[in-house]
Structures are given as C-alpha cells and as structure tokens.
Amino acid sequence: MIHPHFLLPLRRARLYVWFIRRSGFMSTHVRIERYTSLPSTEALKAGLECVFFTSSNTQVFSSDDARSKFKERWLGRYLQHDPHYAYVALSEMNDVVGYLIGSTDDPAITSRFADLAYDQTFGALSQNYPAHLHVNIAPHHRGCGLGAELIERFVADLRKGCVPGVHVVTSKNARNVGFYNRNGFREIAANGVGEREFVLLARKL
Image (cartoon, rainbow, N blue to C red):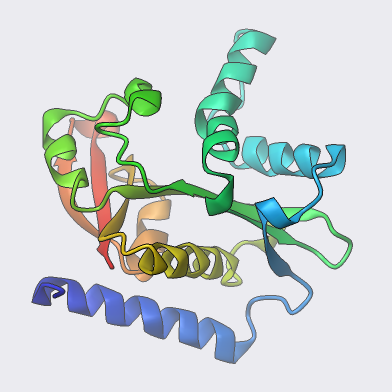
C-alpha cells in the first residue's frame, strides 16, 4: 500500500506524462528501444558516449585513464551488468539522442557500487527504494518529455519485477531536482552543506 504522502507526487508524475503525450511535445520522430534489442555497433557505442559526456557536469579530465574510469563508473558498468534495464532513444536517422540506465540492486549494499559511498542516512533508506537510475538527454532534445518517457519505461519494468521503489541521489540545488519532482520523486533525506549538499529523491512503486 502506498503511503498517502506519496500520492500527490505520483499523481503529478502521471499527469505530467499524460500531458506530454497528449500535447505531442515528445517528438514523433524519436523512438525508445531496449539496449539489448539493438545491434552492438560502434555507432551505438559512440552515440551513447557522446550523450554521456555532453550531459556530464565534469568536462575536464586529468588524463585519458581518468576519463575512461569516469565513463565506466556512470555508464559502462550498467551496460555490462544491467543491460536489460538500459533504454536508448533514437532519432529517425538512428542517432542516439538520450538514454536511461538503471539497476534493481541497492547501491548501499551491492559491492560493485561500493565506490558510490552511500552514507548511513541514505543507506538506511535506499533499501525501501533499491532501484536507481541515470538518465541523460542530448541538449537539442531536452524539454520535450523524452526523459519522462524513459523513466516510465523503466518504472513499468520495475513494477513487473515487484520492485518496491526507485531512487536517485543528486545535488540539493541541481537543475534536475525539478525534473525528478515532476516525475513522482520526492526528497526523503539530505546530507552535506552548501555546494556539497546532496538529496535522496525517491519514488514508491
């Protein structure tokens, strides 16, 4: 049973997705495919990397090795270990214009995510929302509902697997907080101070 304080964010998320679909904001020339259904090509790999690095807050790296490790941390290991929870948005020319990668494994207790260093506060709560995700959209395709559609694809699969909830961790003042709020996520915990303050945003399923 969903706790009453989650009902309003969930209703807003459903209304937001409904509005996006009805208004036609999401381009009809963009389609979403499962990563596992696509042929593994250099074009796909390059497209995912392009969207990843274009969307990243980190643009300067001390070395090629540092850049490679950064990509592995936030993209590569999800494609390797959880490819069935990866979704790719493609233009009519088959260019990658966005993607969502996720996992149903709680990063607070899963060894391959030990480098994310969830603190005690977040770790105690994430078990109720074990799934987590990362979504990135090419700049010229933002604001048209594509991110919302990717999240709903992931959520639909999570519900089929009876996963109780999903979460993201982001900076308190990050611009993506509003995006996640509109998609049914609400703040359940925060830690840190100032520019180093982070929030745990969760959505009950």
